[in-house]
Length: 214
Image (cartoon, rainbow, N blue to C red; front, side, top):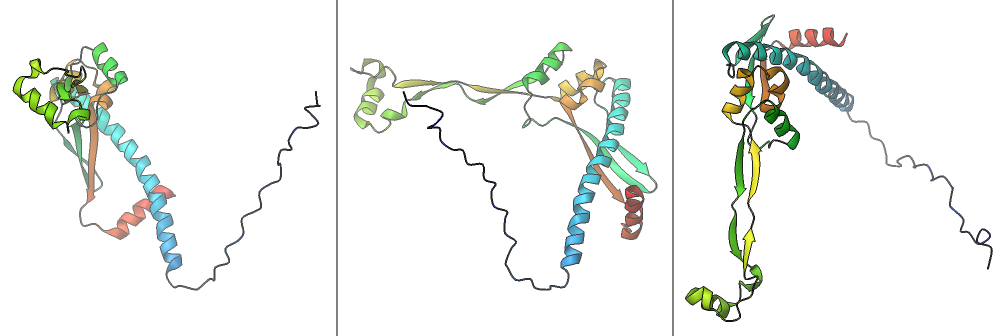
């Protein structure tokens, strides 16, 4: 037998060539620096907003838990305030478009919290599409379905139902009534905030942002 090591194929270990610098011509355009700067600031502010929003919603969460446990149901929205700025602070029921996962269901059921199971696709029998153009067969079926000779066994097909589990108003109320909102509020609800500053003084707003960044 020939030496397998001697006949082994060579592995290419050559490093890929470095990308060439663009050879496109460069043209001076007024405003590019400003545009690039604005984009950079917007990107930074987007990240900053997410961080601040998380802190604010954390406080909203705690306030809703306190208010809801006092009354034993979903509390009403409130207005948050700080130095002339206000925000509509809202607790919304989790959308029916956002289905409960198995983990979510397990958490709710462990606390005896109910939810709703909605049928999204009806369970029904359907005619196999393979025979939809067989007019002779369909004519026989329409005359006497049970007496049609040579009826294919798979002529009728079963379409199984599809279901989704969703949060209801009662689900949210039960979370507060049972005193478990601190743990389950994020499962059954969504926090929403709409902040605004009266007068929209951009200069003052910029000073506030500069202070945050500093």
